[in-house]
Length: 110
Image (spheres, rainbow, N blue to C red):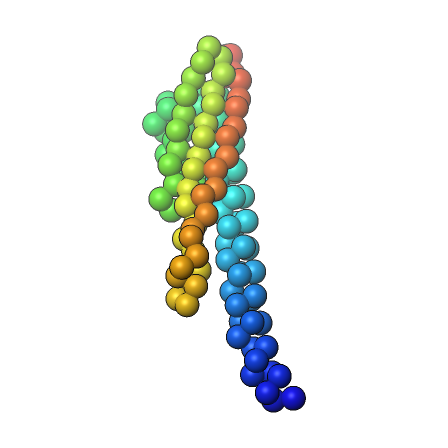
């Protein structure tokens, strides 16, 4: 029994680390999606591009890029970020790129 546990324990640790890393990637994806949406909403309601991008940068994961473009009455925002690999013994695994895009129509001035 002890020998089997000693053989299986490293595998269980590896699976646990992998699952935790996948949760981190999922959380980062949610954050870039929220950042894109919030930036597009702020730009559409009339905030300056710099102010809207600052709002998105606060919501996005650290180090993420926020790109905003306007075309007529449409505002398009793309947010892209990196999630580092698990590190430690798993440092050979690459990181993951998460990105999201949001489009909003500019509101008419009141």
